[in-house]
Amino acid sequence: MPGGPYPPQQGWGQPGWPQPGPPAGRPQPGPGFGLIPVLAAAVLFCLGFLAVSWERHGGDLKFTTIFAAAKHTDAPSDFQPLISWIYVIGFGMFLAVIGTYEATMWSLGRVRSRRSAYWTFGAWANLAWREDGKLRPVRITATILQFAFLCLHGWGLWAFYDGKPSNVGPGAWMILAGSACLVLAALLGPRVRSVGPMPPGGYRG
Image (cartoon, rainbow, N blue to C red):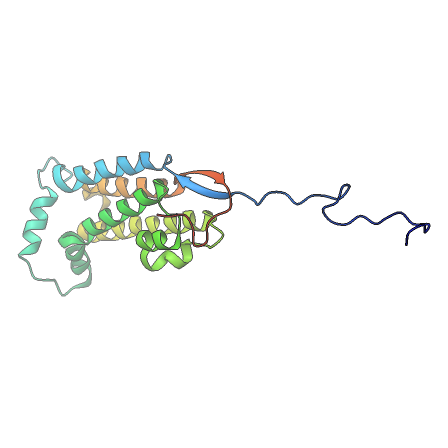
């Protein structure tokens, strides 16, 4: 009341009250250190599948020879030989290719929207992507997937070598080392910087 005993009341946004700050920055990923182990994995996979022997004791049995023989062999009926046959006939190479692709996309910072998460992680996209753009769920999902691929490589090679690690040749060890590099790539991931509010649905790409 004018002329009353109390001073005029101040409201939100008026001098003396805290002012609303700018919108919080959102993370935007770009190429990061994860690309280094991805490149190492690609080299190891190429050497392991194409050039280096799978025999431990001075042999020259390469994966290409094993693959050619498996193509002309019917699927075994026993469980362990069947796992070995499935791995050799193409599943091992599929794991290497899909794992390298996912780690490359993630480390390049291309997972920026629900759509790009779908093209990178497939059915796992709903676990990886959050509408707030936070990248921790993406990193966790990428790491879990790469660790699962490493375990599948290990299972296939365990079956191939009849559960005897002493027989594992250098080529097979390179496959395992390449898969382990992809786990590291998933952990390192992209470089992240903070930008303005994220567009609805995420950044393009």
